[in-house]
Amino acid sequence: MSTGHIKVRKSVRLAKIENQNNRQVTFSKRRNGVFKKANELVVMTGAEIGIIVCPQGSKPYSFGHPNINETINKYVGEERPPSPSSPGIDDKYVQMFRKANSSELNTQLNSLQDQLDFALHLKSKLKQMNKKVEGQQEWFKGPIEKMNYIEASMLKEGLEDLLLKVKNYGTEHGYGYENGKWKAE
Image (cartoon, rainbow, N blue to C red):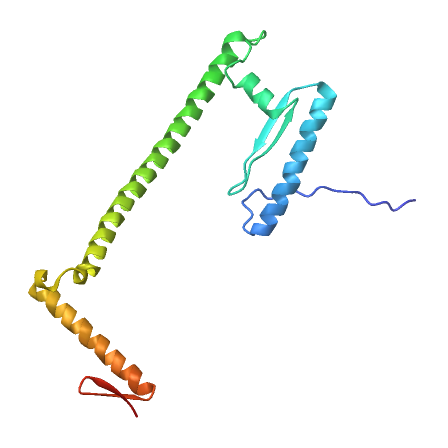
């Protein structure tokens, strides 16, 4: 009597895989399995197949026979030939798909347009704020006679700060400052 091993399939609990690495590995294996089964179906029956798999945050993967673009265009695109077996039913579903797809695309377009409008509005506000700041920073470049009291006070404080920094620098490097003149110490 032989003691051969029997391969038993275990059932898999269907739930989202939380671990990112495990989820990616499972996605790759299952995607390859689906594409392999689709290829087998094509070889065995001559069927036309189009599969698009779009994982979150990654590029889409596709499998099609004879070609994914031809298959999509043939059954969903504009040049779809009428089905001889059920001419009206297939067209109804295709039109429903197109309407749902265009509705979803319009929603996405509106959302993107809102984001663009907000970004342009923000850009405009930032430009205005930048011009204000630049104007405030350049007030001292004009003639002193045209300054108001606040601007003159700010200029005086800035010059006094600068003089103090220069004095400290000179002292640190061996120079003294007396009566408006530098002396080597």
